[in-house]
Image 1 (cartoon, rainbow, N blue to C red):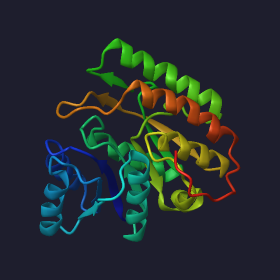
Image 2: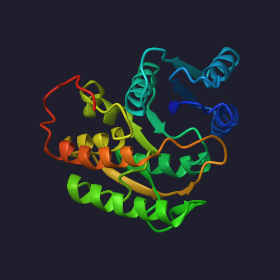
Image 3: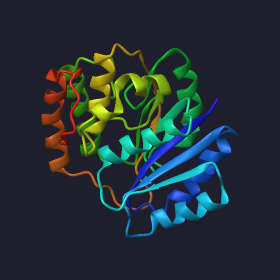
Image 4: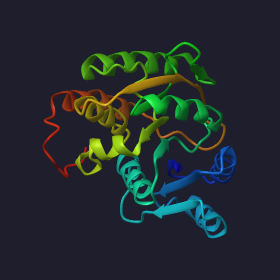
Length: 241
């Protein structure tokens, strides 16, 4: 079995090497694909050096595109090309702890999409202020109601997809260029009749680097879930949002 951790990155030089080493230590069949949008802090150079030393590390260095959504799609595609059976999508700032991956993979044996959830029993957040915690709770309930998905944590970017799930979703049909890719893939998975599961994780506020979250991203995400709710998923498009 081939497992790939897929990490979209931008300015994660302080985190990327220790995270990759921790991921590779989890199991012998674990590989890592990093999609970096030409980070000015040299993240991609660190990954490139590691890739030359370790065949289980792959770098996708993008110099003409930027965005969490398109980076994630590019990473999924590369992992599939490399023969992945399961792809673990996660952030590269240690907010998503590798120690939860074994439980996610175990749940993936009976589901197509597994969510690392802060909102099921045993899950939660650590190190965040009450405002961000409230936003997480309200935003997830809103997305759940609009999309109609059987998932509590609709904004979690810590997930496992089977290869078959990604092929069924159709990566070429995804539009989102930014963080809304998370909800777009949930909506696509629901429309395709895929099976969901959630396992508890503890989300850790990043210890190094800066978050890119802002109110503009939040409001855009609230609008986009309505677009995904009413999209005709059998129609292919290259339009980005």
